[in-house]
Amino acid sequence: MGIKVAKFGGSSVADGIQLTKTKAIIEQDPDRRYIVVSAPGKRYEGDNKITDLLYLCKTHIEHNLPYDQIFQVVADRYMAVEINLGVKADLLKYFDEIRENLKKNPSSDYIASRGEYLNAVLVAAFLGYDFVDTADLIKFDAKGKLLMEETDEAIRAELSKHERAVLPGFYGSTPDGEIKTFSRGGSDITGSLVARAVGADVYENWTDVSGFLMADPRIVKNPKQIGKISYKELRELSYMGASVLHEDAIYPARMADVPINIRNTNKPEDPGTLITAEGDGNDEHIITGIAGSKDFTVVALYKNMMSSERGFVRRILGILDDYDINFEHLPSGIDTVSVVMANEQINGRLDEVLEEFQSRLRPDTIDVIEDISLIATVGHGMSSRTGTSAKLFNALAEAGINIRMIDQGSSEMNIIVGVENKDFEKAIRAIYDAFVE
Image (cartoon, rainbow, N blue to C red; front, side):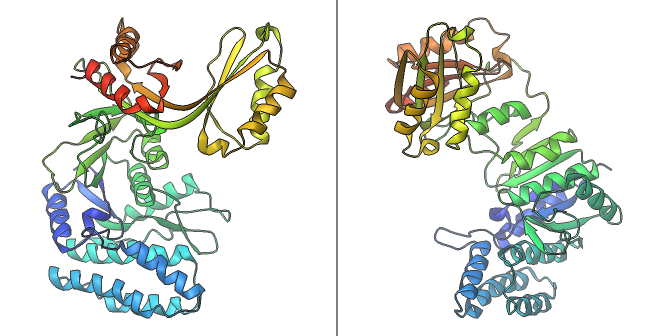
């Protein structure tokens, strides 16, 4: 028997109907032995996530306002699912315990984590699996930093005692026993940590989409699905704005070389997207995906004999550091270097930055190009295919799009172009049509 770790997101465990689907998925494959669950998400448009209601409880507590009715809404939702599914999870005792703790004005992390905690108790009873709390398994230091090796050891030791178990995602604890939550993608991270610890054959991440698409469906009509993608390709697409797993959720599984499979709870027959170390490697498409973001500013610096002037780039980075600005790209030539920055990073301080560049770098000219979009075309097959760049540039030229910047990573896995904001969607469609359609 192998081991699969399956994480089910908020939409997959939102109510009794979704939990019934989840149970059928789990029972369909006996290798799905360790299940990580989120708190219940929205059941319909306008509904509230359980976690949002719990945060609202905390806000009321801090402002000395009654919170009992809000928590009762939370409790009633779990009770309704328990009754509808015919489960005996003894939730009342857990509600009483949480109510007592709420009187002590606990941390936001504790209150928010109770959504996953209660749901894991309920799902474990529904499946007939053991409930294993992650509070003492996911370990953070006193400053809130995840202790990866200690966590790995604790999870492995505990789960060796359980043939099958349900674990709550999103949280762990600090050395003093205080509950600590992850900042983003919490349940995804928990699932990845569990998969690493037990040496899973695959980490399944069940959500409400059938994997990743080659382009944003809001821009490209019915884009094709990505069947298989490498960790590196995913990182490139994620960095350029694609809506994918948070990097922290990928890292533990990647370190243990555990494949990640993104699946759709509502369409379990779909194979989804498989994330592996090597990626696809087939010849169907040269590229894996296209992603991009708007609103960047490019500052182009020219200085004669720049290449022989030591420390020029270091001084650029020092100025950006002084203003706490991250740069996106730094394409350069013999006597030129361009600094690409997100407008939200500049935050209205462009004139100040330009003054610093002028006084500390003494360039011959400074050119500023605003309202730029960056588009990344990503794929393992690009570097080995003659004419890939020409195909991309020809597609943009034929669409009447002027390229304002070109940058290719040293891995030759991506080509990034800068175009004007007004051409952003048009450029993505042109690239997609050239390489996919």
